[in-house]
Length: 114
Length: 112
Image (cartoon, each protein chain N blue to C red):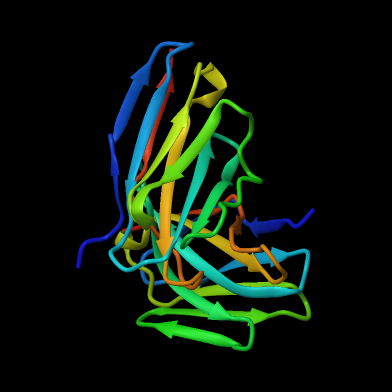
């Protein structure tokens, strides 16, 4: 069974700190990996998508990396702000015929303290 | 442009009743997905539509769940004879040819 794991489940940091969220997956045969943000009671907002052939993607203060061989991805958030407080979800689309859906981790709940 | 929209945003129903949840994907997106987010369970895939191909129903938890997509656009997820364990947030997503998925705000279903 393909699994996606996110550690830690929750993280609290003071405003201004740089931080790293971790995601690991059991099968390296992936098509792409997406990082999402979810605010309480809301849907998912796509932050970054990394194709299997890519090593990293950047958007503003966010940088996501992908290491297929070790089955890991990280989301780096620079100079954190209280508005970054949310749950961050990692999702993998695996390769192979018929594999279109995303397999999600259970998320890391981030709190940025002013 | 308009994103993925879902209706209703909240639905409370009595056990045993049928419910219909609606999803309007982003215009031009060929693929549509339904997921369920239950407390403590994370996000689970339910069903996938791509163009005119037969849908992938492999994630539907029971035969009480069904979905259709009319005209390659709007989709309806139907749950018959609802049970309390069906209580969850139902999320719809769309993408262009299986690329990056964009999610709607979800429908929160509560079965009493």
